[in-house]
Image (cartoon, rainbow, N blue to C red; front, side):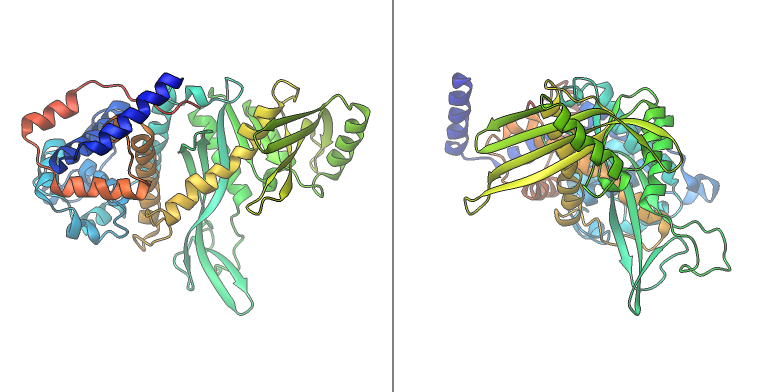
Length: 474
């Protein structure tokens, strides 16, 4: 271990001492970008271009850009943090990118943002969702996520919803609405199921858009029965099980999901779950938990790591009967986490979960930290990064309800790819000093795409060279 640290420090010193050649840097960044995609997901054109093109039924002779080239354009827009589709033509129209589009897709130019948007108005949302899920499934099949499984078996999937767009007028027939006093807001939300890892990688597995059905055109938006996060979960769960019936999943969710129907779905599908539980939820479960903790004091343990102390209590085989008279056997785990705050004062936070996993001394710490508390990563590494990290999740890339969903799904692919690039060994070997932040990496990728010069032979060698990409161990 000590030799590894010394070698790492020596590499950093050498990197600082050697002046970097901008042209070489551009090539290495381009290689990391293209090779990461092709290494994990195969040829770019093949992965993105296998959807059914809705334009083929119209005027195919007027189609200048294939479907794959337009999807790739949207990826570049998000990866380079352009912030709006009008920037595509202003920023990405470079000699290198024109040649890249010729190499990848056989087109003669970089598509315009409006051309991309015209396709997204008609493109099947379900087919684009298949690309997103398929790419995450590929990472599972290639065992990229194998080391991050919980209890050496389960892939941890955080379930949570986030807002996409908000309007002060009825944007479309599917808008959700909320009234505060005299003001009504209309908005679009989405429910996400993301695979989360202890190292901070977060990959979208499947999305379910929360929207009102256009069931009765005579009713106003306010009069229709609103869709909600819980209803969206039931739809998402059915789709997840249909697509991945044998994948061992461990769902980590907030207290909204501590209800009998959610327990039943997970039991029927063979999924494990860990759901936040407050003291005023499931009163019978909380009461029995306290009684069992007194009766079985051996079901307690504590761990100290640095300045953090964790004390655990748990109880198994608690019988719960829901409002539909369905019985469930659950466990409850409580964690008291104590650590110094920014002022140096000891701060204690209580976490409590209800689960269908039997808790014991051997798994309690992993369940709490990598099954329950890891849920916050969908918010921090997922939604917050996509909203404030330059992806502009809450920006209206289009006003069409179908295109809005396509842009959202393409953003998920871009975020996935950027995580693989930033955390992969291919880039770390070439740039041991790093870039300071993922935003800086996005800027460097943009600069490389704008200024790189590659011959056809260099490009071909770059895309065909076989490599290995490893990640920071958990």
